[in-house]
Length: 260
Length: 260
Image (cartoon, each protein chain N blue to C red):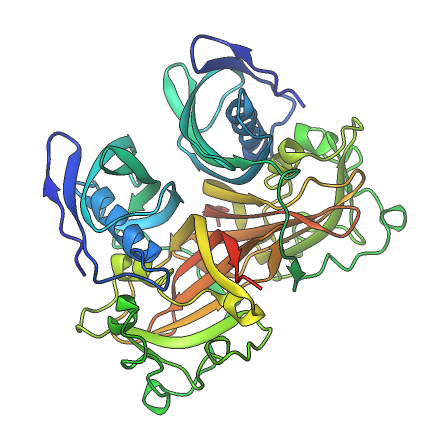
């Protein structure tokens, strides 16, 4: 997944933003950066499982070297909070805060009022990205199954900013917190189905991690309900192969309109 | 609203956590602390309007003096990101990051797929907090109108973790970003209607601010859909008196169960 980091001094880590996860706009995908941030945050953490991760994107990332400074904010008995700032050429690319815990050591009440996407089995859904978009590297990394092709890319947007699909990494890596962080931004923006949107710029994304995902396909649901002043929120759910909501995220993004 | 802060050195501010906003658990309400954090973040900010605010609660706050350290993360042409850490007795109580902009200087696409709570007019809804709970100071601060009394407090929870109500401050202060930050945590936790929950502890809350709210009543909707491992997410919407979604928040909280 290209998230290797190397020690670079006390509380500092370095690595490389590869060109293998570029998105539609020709820049490294925000979910890839989120997975990198989570990787930095996890180094030496007292607990293995992120509970909540909030990331503020400051500048577009570039291919090449990055540095990260990780701060331990507070280590408690059951949770630890940490902060990471990611730099490229001494300029801040993003900052993220996360609270970690250990899903093995506690349990508690369960009540699920939501439900997973209502999709035909993955083997009955065509791969909607198979080699179609060689100019968008991240599309080659995922097996992405949906009953029908998206409509915005054919010039006939549905007007309904909702996506449901199956996803998994083509390289066989099973879902975990980093893969889910990556996935929250790895799908095209829901607002494309409103028509006329060229791209979006994510200001902030918060993800809740609710379980270690079971191996296999992730069923994802993305939706936007509120668009105003050129900003949109996007909600994203990841349900694991056992039907458990494993991750839920929400982002605020600025819309870049297509020239008329 | 008891959110006055005083300069206490470069990038530092001090103030007092009053006892006027205590919640059910006898501690200062998390929304009040969020309003304090936002107040600190707004001091000297390049732009007046928060777009997004993410707050990680580290320790319960106490009544009395606090200090805040504010860092300017990045000032761009149209947005500025800042971070605040709030301390009491040199221990970190919370840290929050926010991005600000100016709602007067930009506009853009609008599409609203949600709708405000479907409530009778406020004058037809009884005040559900009028003097009922003198041991919970924050309940005396709000005029809170709902068609029916909550059920959990009568020992007959509905099983449906959803709340819709009208709210405004009793002191006549009109809604603004600080009042909305306060409101996002000022209502009883939705999960109380599941029964058996003694209280909740908020780990993190992210709020999107989408408009400067019109004066008058705020219509609020709170709902929880996913409860697992003793954690619950709570979504909160604030619709202003003109029917615009002015604020949307989501928190992750730990449930403290009632002793059996």
